[in-house]
Length: 238
Image (cartoon, rainbow, N blue to C red):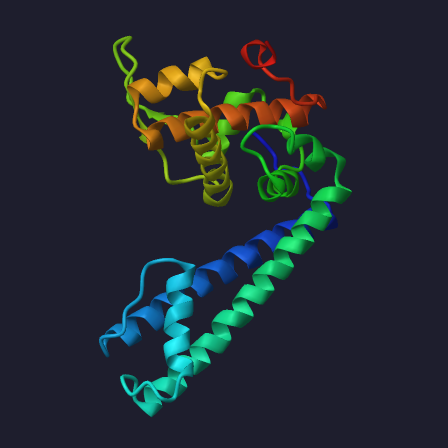
């Protein structure tokens, strides 16, 4: 039987900071979608992205634009105020996460690992109270949900897709970090990462990202459990 280690008040506070920031991001997305949908009813559309939303809010703020009725303009203005408030609060949460990151020695060490930034590093330190509770990096990766489901029998290994169970927040951060590493490798070349080069040649980007996220999770566990710093592979150091 595996017991869950007790988190410190500081870890609980950092975890609450991450959860609240994630909630505000989802609410911000909902407000943006509402603004786009409401204005589309009046034939006012804008390109996808942050700048497109800003264009829509300029239309709402212009009383001379008669495409939007006054009652609708009042509602949309209220949504715009709410959106700006969400953005300000999320930026403040980002500042608090970076401050917590700088105050944690373990988090700073994890930041040296490719694909791991302050957000993922602090989330790991806050979530995993005792990394030694996991016997191996594979167990840790499976706990997050980055290991394929097994459908093996008769001595034949059949691996399926990853499960949507486990810690969805950590899994999302690991995959986002892996995608960032892949984007950088595609721009600057993958010759220094032969394992990733071969993988990208055989598999789609999203599949390669899951495999790379699994690898990053195992490295992060080793750094936390053994107190090590990140060491570049020989192919990178050469």
